[in-house]
Length: 255
Image (cartoon, rainbow, N blue to C red; front, side, top):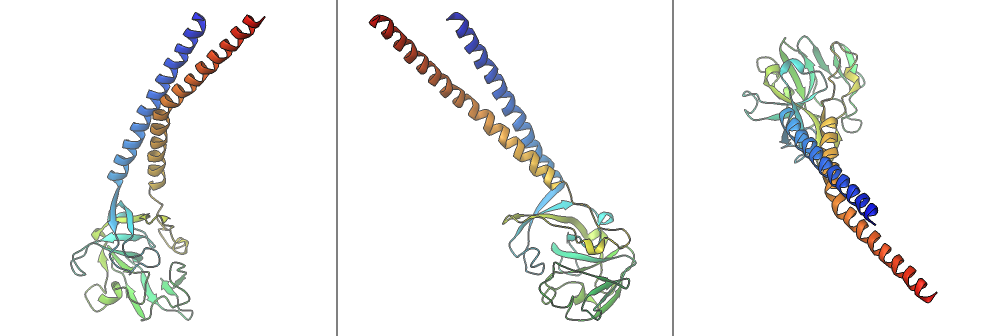
């Protein structure tokens, strides 16, 4: 009996240590993931439908903090420009410094430096823009359009101004990586811009951040649940042991 007691106590102590370790590691991962995400990302609520159907008005998005030098064609960015509204806005970058952006070709597509760009994020079979334009983007500037080309107030609305509606690259503060609510997942980079010089941007570490937070939560919950579950299993084993001992005693008495 004494040997069994020591074994049981040893297992109990080991389980308690493992449970505490799991909770401790889980807390580090969970809190570390949140801190990591807070340093890299800023939440933003999309105010209008100018980026529909990619993001809808009221969507809560996560935008990775970047500077203008990291912007690539196809990126959906958050920027602030006093000429436009002096408030954060969300648009898609379709041209960078040195590009000639025009619309539309014979098939209704936008072109960048004469190369037609397929835009699968637009609605239906409509042309890339209901109005035609040709813009030479100055160095250090960006040409931006909304994905809802019929109603978006974007660079096309400022074509007659200095710079033809372009915005300084330094006006960009973040790049959209994911729709957090309602759950929409990570935004895919449009491959149609990949063949142009500079290519497209790489997704930020949003998946790694979410995986870290999730792993931490699982360890915390699992470690916290270990104690009650182990205690319940121990009580069942002891109850079964007492029942078996009682049965054997009764059998011996009958004999």
